[in-house]
Image (tube, rainbow, N blue to C red):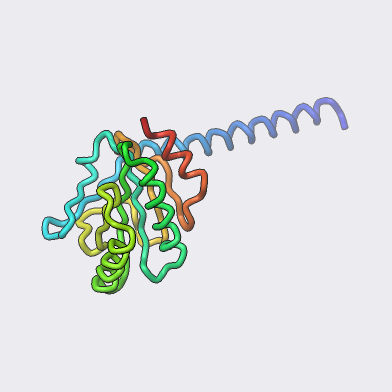
Amino acid sequence: MRALDFARIIARLGATFIFLVAVVTNHVSAQTTVKPQIRTTAESPVIFDLTKQDGKTVLVFHWRTNCPVCLDKLEELRSNIAGWKAKPFIVLAVNHDRSRQDFQSYLQISRTLNGDSPQLIHVYNKDIAQDSLYKGTALPTSYLIDDKQMLRHTYVGRIPAEAWNDIADLLP
């Protein structure tokens, strides 16, 4: 192989690498510039408005009671919330059961067994007036929103262990 051909190959590889870095960097920064809107209806038994959560890190967790992964993650969420009791961190757990009664039955049993935490807010999906993030993808789906209400991470499926590091990095 001639030196000129080798130099062209290296130049193409370099250009490809720079392009890929730019694509990845733009994808990551694009996600951190999204300011989502999530709020419940005025008729909802639980009032929630993301615009009123300044200064708090929020994990929005979309789930269903017939989803074993979701139920497993709820237990993990409760444990982590207990560890961050003094931190400005809340979980908005949005239930997607077909029946409101199934959701309420689960809540009654869960609260009897686990108590209640002001950092774990449960709402039924039909009580959501606006959600600019969730588009009906697979459950569970979670969104990590920083204290300035900017979307930082999206987790589809199981919340990975690294997510807890992501949350810890956002907390004071």
